[in-house]
Image (cartoon, rainbow, N blue to C red; front, side, top):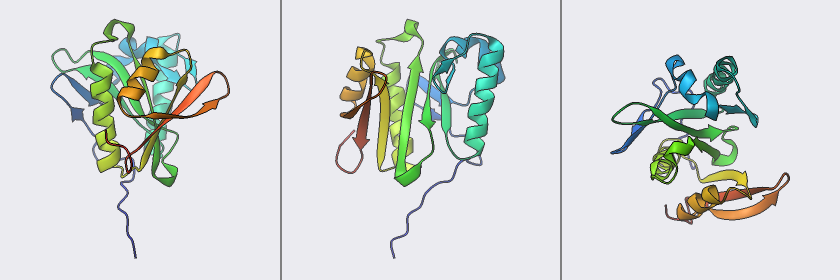
Length: 174
């Protein structure tokens, strides 16, 4: 009999993941002003603090239901939120969908690469995922470059000008 250990969400303690420059941490109510411009839920962007707060509440509920885990990407030295990332839409068949957004002021500084690597390690080692998928617009050249640098491969074109990428832990190194 082949037994697999799958960690069930939510965890007893929300996971905090850190590198030398960033920490992936739980988003707090005091972060709402900072994340309003990068708050999304079901492809809708928040336009007010109230909408960002409501969206965050839905994300927290999804976490409590075991369907998602969503981190704020914070600068180690200032604790300022630079962006967000997480696994979304459940974990069927040991697959996680990774999504991320970074504030434009922090593009090109390596923050998202580090955040994605931390999330990869957590997905592989803690959630026991076998694959990660990511979806982005065909027009988002920077996101495509990031995914390719992280050894994702484009698997298919989707509706609405989107591309699906995949990283298979069993066959592809990070």
